Amino acid sequence: MNHDDLRFGNLNHMQIAWSEVTPGEVHASWSGHLTACGKSVIEAKPVYESRVRDITCAECGATAVFDLNTARERAKAVTEKYEATGSLSHADAFELRETAVKTIAPRAFKARRAGDSWNAISTNFLMSTGAATETDGTSIFVGRVGLAVIEGLEASEYQGGY
Image (cartoon, rainbow, N blue to C red):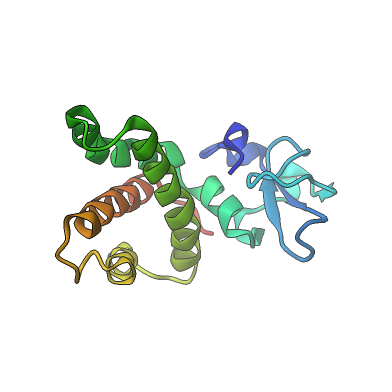
């Protein structure tokens, strides 16, 4: 993800764009040079013609409709006590949080666009990762981090139609 282009809430300046790397896929861009997912732009529509509903790239869509920093903060609240006790290094905690955001946010974008509820997204996450069925500490911990990310996405979701 291109962290320079995390522009949630600033959809008035977003352009839909295309990249040579992904023919046929529609991205979001705020600079006109890079998409939100970090690909170079070959063509972009003017801001006044760009709508969130036109985005087909899940990563760009997630960047546009969710505040990913809120999701990161919620996940950090879960990992901080493990970091403080030394059972999880700062680097590993950061990597876990970023991986969770990069994995869950695009899937949540697609699911919400398809009309799924946040409850369905949470349940699907828990079942697919084994966090709901496994009893080992690692699965439960991963489940807690993932649910924190999902809660952050839900709390920060763009309320317009997409």
